[in-house]
Amino acid sequence: MDDTSFEPARRGRTRLPSGRFLGWSEQGPEHGAPVLFFGGAGTSSALSMRREDVERAGVRLVAVDRPGLGASDPLAGRTLADWVEDVRDFVIARALGSPAIVAFSQGAPFGIACAADEIGRSLVIVSGTDELAAPHLAELLVPDVRGIVQRVARDPEGAEAFFRGMTPAMMRQMVLAMIGDADRAVYADPAFDAAYRRALDEGFAQGGEGYARDTVLAFGAWPFDLGRISMPVSLWYGAEDTSPVHSPDLGASLAHRIPSARRTVIDAAGGAILWTHGEAILAAI
Image 1: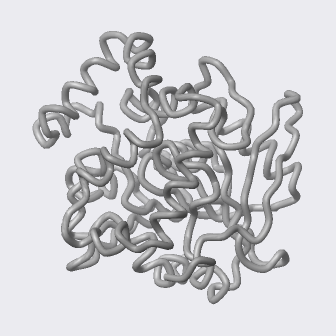
Image 2: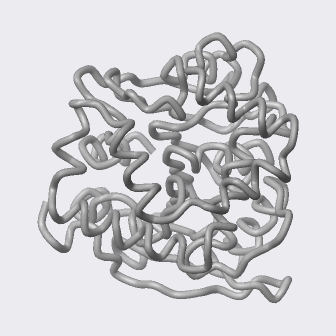
């Protein structure tokens, strides 16, 4: 990867009817088919997919900062339903029509919430977290993750206060401790590491509140019926994904719960398939 692989082509902020602003970063041709991108935990929109993959696909990839992250204004006590309304307003304000959505890692519940409300024309989940609070997954969770799920269910406000203590350095160290051999080359690449550090610094520029709220929403019960999603959904996982906060069965139960879902598991790949197999993922939209 070179130093421009993750450099956004365009950046800005869009005012919503509420008066708040959402920050965004774009890759690809301005008149390409619009694709929204929802990033992983604690990162700003500066880190999305590799520029080369986006340009080859000919899409206009619009990465959006969730409230309190990056350049987006905070929204205290926000819910997944609030995010759906923000995205609906954002799509109208930027005249994006009916975009596809790509959601990575902790961005998954935010993408699925939009699909459940019929925003967009298709959804692609890449190395996504699952509904970790779902009872059928309890026995598949490692003890630390099971403990977080239980803490969020028992005391969401206390859990959110705890998560606010996260910093960019702590977040990076935690992620590096989770990845397996299949992903180490990606995270060790100097260009990627610089882009990841920048996105974390921007993600936490307003403090830890945005990350904390995201995490409570992701680890809590999801307030929508996955069985009613009708738009095309693609689930992409690497067979060697070792992250305990991604889907513990590599999306198998998600594929079963979403009638329109198709699942792809890539052999000898880890959770970083967004950057190692981005061209194939975009081609499948």
